[in-house]
Amino acid sequence: MFEKPLDLRKARILITNDDGIHAPGLKALENIAHSLSEDVWVCAPEVEMSAASHSLTIHRPLRIRHISERRYAIDGGPTDCVLLGIEQVLRDHKPDLVLSGVNRGGNTGEDVTYSGTVAAAMEATLLGRRAVALSQEFADTHPVKWATAEHFAPDLIRKLVSVPWPADTLMNVNFPDLVVGSVLGVKAVSQGRRKLGYRLEERNDPRGRPYVWIGSSRHNPFFEGENDIVLVQQGYITVTPLFLDLTHQAMLAKTSELLG
Image (cartoon, rainbow, N blue to C red; front, side, top):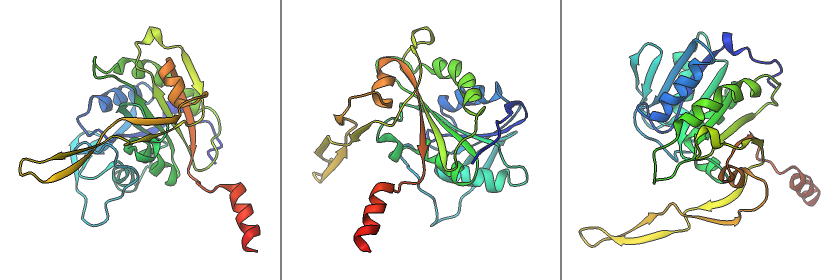
């Protein structure tokens, strides 16, 4: 359990993402982190690794490229970046807080199981660090509103780390696709439920060979109630504490009775 409030002014912060070292969302997160602490480090993927989930590179070596002071690019995924950032780059003075994002696109509902942004925060949590995943909703019809995340994230992070956290818990934050003045507020909500990938498009390549492309449309049979999916679309910033233990305790008890 993270029992003590975290003094961000004295904290070492590690930031990462899944959109890559050159992503504008990472720049936004650097601005956010530097508003909280002077001790900010970056370990991010060389290239975009969206939807990498909690994958770890174990069948080839990983290279760490020193870009500039306190900034490193790693030729792996978000989980690799956090692991190497904490256990290699910062092994002599490990970070107090890990921030992941700001992702280009929301990570609500079932997104958390696919998301490299959330997976990076999960890895940090497994390694005993407080972690927050941050994502910015957007639409293809206009530029991403990075200013919204930059405006609200610092104070929100300060509030989140001012209280104890249970062990194995991370925070998943989503910002609505609205300008700063139109955001309705902040809500602590549960994770919604929907399914990515229902639209499968069958096509043929230039040589006539068939292939299948997984589309981005989502099937939403549970798109009701007060959850992260619904509230962020209504204009709220959503905060969802996620727990790493996936055990269904009630069913565990029943299964134990069943098996004797």
